Every structure is written in structure tokens, then in C-alpha cells.
Image 1: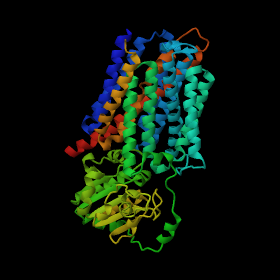
Image 2: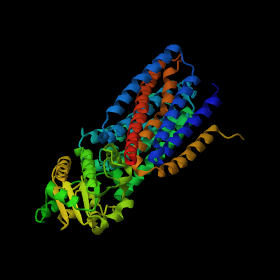
Image 3: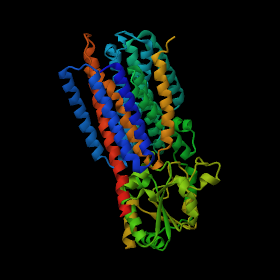
Length: 464
Length: 104
């Protein structure tokens, strides 16, 4: 196959990837989009096989490696639960990052194979591209590993901060840039390794100060990084498919980070610098004095059965308790009683963008009953019951009233406007932002203290 | 004077960022999780580099190391490609199932 033909076919595969993302604009076209993505990938792999000279034994080894990776990937994809999706995505990002590092290293040691010059005499432009690609790849790798550990609960979600943290990160950042310049000039493989190792280090340092509930931003950001790493390698390999994909993924991750930050009314830097969250002790003291109305499943079932409309507000707590199926059952029995059901999803509900939507989809909730914040917020005022399950900060009216509050200005769901509010929660403990939710003490709020799944199941029993 | 091919690649890169920008804004928020898993799968097109690295043979003594690195990258990328596309398919399938029920 000639170089020109191969390059044209890589371009086609890049276009198929664009169509794959385009398909996600609606659930109807999304599966066709995914098919385009698979086609694009198959094309890119086939072209590569036809383009490079492979010995027969080499081909066998490569197919074995593909089969091993493919089986592991397929098993993971079939076994993973929807609740565990954020950690799965974080894990996958780490693989892209590490693969970028490995390919860059391989190109560094064997530049002839990639037509980048000869050993210790690599083209300057290629050196810059591969060092940038390797460095971003390394940051993506360790950053994603930390994100994975936090999401999987193998590491505490509380921010890890220490004095001088930002200063150290800044120094390392400057160090990385200097090393890239040094590698470009001197082509030392020791320095190339050092570059990769300190990039691994900064990946860890960047993610440890970021708290658990900021994970939607972290995952989106790492998604973006994995794209830029791929693009860097794409430039090195002079491969259009890789450049296009890297740019697509990079901008996709960046947009998602932006949407997530906006959902929390925080700047990107504020999230990245970390250390947000924790409990405010003064608030905890005040709390015990205020009266709270609490009820049981029977009260909740009675209220909702006699309502004409109910809006369900799910949050991360629902995911943790695996309560989505029970919630759907509850909605089904309410619908039989003629109650209108809709779901309100806040952009940052859950641990990754769109997390709640996937969980509800898993529980067979029709997607046209699930609404984004801006489309449903005005409906709360005409709703009899708002059923809040596992959400907290995103419903806190303090975000609108108290300019001193850490969540001030965050767009919230106007749950308080509903005639009555049912709050399923284990205790009165504050949410991630560490502030008290004044909604708990309102006249029209009924607290349902229990595990989300157990409470919902009890309500279902009382509805029959 | 002839334009350096690098500039063409840079052009493709910049234009793709713009394409990505507009395409991703049109993705419906309820499909943001599948968006992440599918972008993850397609960024594993880095497997192209892994195949080149794994298959290349040279007379250099370092060839062995570069090949092993290539194979390792190949396995990782393959996990991502299969895992990413399949898990996306699985999620999108759930969006379909409900639609059917709705029609009934």
C-alpha cells in the first residue's frame, strides 16, 4: 500500500470517528454512531497491517496480543455494573495514557521504524512531539490511576493537601518544560526517562488534592488529556486518524469539564487547585436545635399516592445504595395510580457527566421522563411532591440566598418550590460542600431517615 | 517555497478541534457517559503506533526493548478498544429497550 493511499484511508477513519460522536446527539442515532466508530477503528487497524512490513511470525504475535487485550476488554465491558462506570472510564483513561507513553518510548528507541530518523539522530520536530505526547500520557496515566482508586473507594475521597503543594506543582511543571527542551536538544534517553517519571509524579500530585464530589471534573479533564496525548503521538507518527481523534477527544473532554464546572459555579482552576469540601463544625452545633419533621415509608406512600405529580431528584446516594431499580418500581406503581412522574437530573449529580442518566436507563426509566435542570426547574412550583433521593447540595436554597456560602451561585434544582418535599437520607449530615441544607428544616419537608434502597422498597410495599 | 507537511497536519489538528467543539456541544447531556466511553475507545486508535512498534525489526540492539514496549501498548489499546466500544454499545442498548417499552 502506498503512503498516500494509507494517509487517505486514515483520513476516512478520522471522519468515521467524527460521525461516531455526531451520532450521540440523540439516543435514536447513537447506536449507528457507535457502529461508525467501530468501522473507523477496524479501517485504521487494517490499513496499518497492510502498510507495515510484518513477518509472518510477527503477525501471529500481534494477533495474539490483540486477542488477549480484546478478551480482557470484552469481559470487563460485560461484567461492569453501571454504578461502577466512573471508575471504569478512569481505568480506561489510564490505559490510553500508558499506551501513549509506551509508543513514544518505543519510537525513541527505534526511530527508523517510524521513519523519524536514526537512533540518537531523531528529527527535532519529532522529538518535541513525542516528548509532549509522552509527558501528557504519563500525567494521564497516574492521574487516572488516582482517580480510579478514589472512585473505587480504595483511597479516601477526602482531599489530600499539604503546605507548598501548588508551589511544588509549579516547580515540577517548569521542570517538565525544561526537560522537554533538554531532550529535544540532547536526545539523552536518561533524560527522556526522567521526563516520564516526573510526569508520572505530577499526575499523582495534581489529582490527590481534589475531593470525591469533584470527580466529574477530574474525569472529564483526564478524558481531555488522553486526547491531547494521542494527538501528540499522532504528530510524531504523522498519522491523520490519530491527530483528528486526539483533537476530538481533547476538545470533548474540555467541554465536559466546562459544563461540570458551570454546574457547580466554580472556576476550573478552583476545582483543580483542590481542597474544597470538609465539614464546618459551627454549623453542626446549630443543627441540633432546629426541629425536623421526619416520617416513615407509610407517610411517604400516602403523600405520593394522593399527589397528581411527583418529580424524582436522584443523586449520588441513589447510585451508592443501588436504589435505581427500586425507584423505577416506585414510579411504576405511582403511575398506575395516575400520578405523573418525571425525573430531574442536575449536571453534576453523580461521579461523572451523565452518570444519573445511565443509571436510570439501566433501571428501564424511559429517557423522555428524565429532564435536565433547565428544562424542569420551572415545573417544581406546580408539583405536589419532590422526592429527593441521595442528592443534597444541588437542592440547597442557600446557593441562591447566602452570598457567604461556599456553594453560592451554584445553579440548583428548585426543589423547595414543590408543595411538599420528601428527603431520603441516612442522617442530617451535610453534603459534600460541608454545609447544612436549610431545606431539611422547612415546614413542607418530610425527612425519611433510612438507606435509600430500603426506604424506596418500603414505600413500594405501602403503595400496593 | 513549499509548505512544510507539518503545517498541513497542524491545520488538520486545529480544524478537528473546531469540529470537535461543535459536534460535542450537540451531544445530548443524557448521553454524556456514553460520550466519554466512546471517546475513550476512539482515542485508542493509538494502537496504530503500537502495531508499528511491535512489528518493526531493525539491526539495532535496542530493537527488542522497542518491540516489547509496542506489544505492551498493543494489549492496553486493545483492552480499551474492545472494552470502550462494547460498554458504549451496552449503555446505548439500554436507551433503546425503554423506547420499545414506551411504544407498547
